Image (cartoon, rainbow, N blue to C red):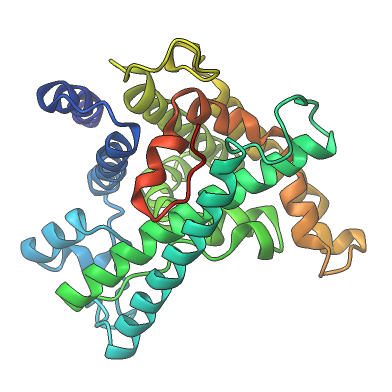
Length: 323
């Protein structure tokens, strides 16, 4: 009951804050709402006793861990946080510089085509144009999260001297399995808090398959929460002739996407992975992405309708098309 009450309070905080500060911009709302999501799962892991050993060494360390914008790396022997070396800090600022350049180029290219470079006329799941649009949108979100991760890591490492794990590791192009895509390469921070806050408590009383299902279900519900608070709740006004409008958002598509992701992940595990099917290792990333790429629009549709993609252009230098 206590955990449910705390989570309920967390869920209404963004709406109260957005109303009090009159924040309508989806990109600004997303930044705040994402922090709330991390707080929710870190609260759950603390409640169920699965916070990292190093985080519970002292009250000061726990407060640091709880508020830190990244996954702190702890020494396996001493449970003390690893120190960010000068090399780590330089590498993170270098990664930030590359991420800004890549995102600027990608935003400029996709903005010119209203984020559908292959046109909007086809939504057939296996149509080449639809797959092409979904691939570029997947790259967009990958690079967007890479930029956020690089910025957070560079600043937090430099200020605190604490080393953090890399959040994104080229999942769209280099994943060798569906489990690796979701478990180690895509948004590793969220993977870690979901594992400690949801998977481990459920696994204690149920099977690994059921615990995995609850994790994907929780991820889908959290993304629905993000869609509602960022784009639906007291949303920004858009031109009447706009193709995409927040009022067109139908909640549920993100939940469906993550249920599908669980299904294909379970099938992969049952079949022993792509390597057991005789598929060339070089071709495996393609097949991994193709398990979900046709359905990627289930995930991104609310971001189109909420105009998040366009409002997010201001975070980097973007060359935009003028009317």
